[in-house]
Length: 97
Image (cartoon, rainbow, N blue to C red; front, side, top):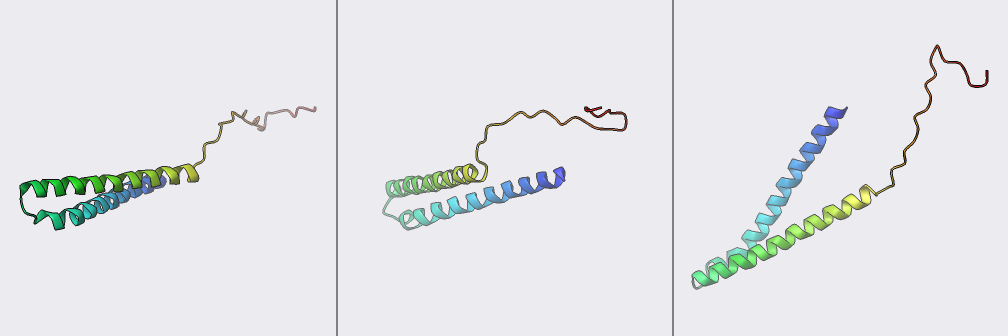
């Protein structure tokens, strides 16, 4: 089961990365498109800077959503150290006699 869970986690990590890249590139292209055909080189550079600004905000939103999801799904609990239960086998004697 450990190998199956590891494979599932790795697959989900790869899919999430691909979705993130697709979302950021979509924002980047959609924000740069109207300005790219602008008057000059400076307008294009300014448009690219604005597009990257918007794309970074999308990354911040994804990171915040991931942190919030992790905090809700995996709440922090103080780890209690418990003693293992005594093993009762064929050679063990009960405590009460």
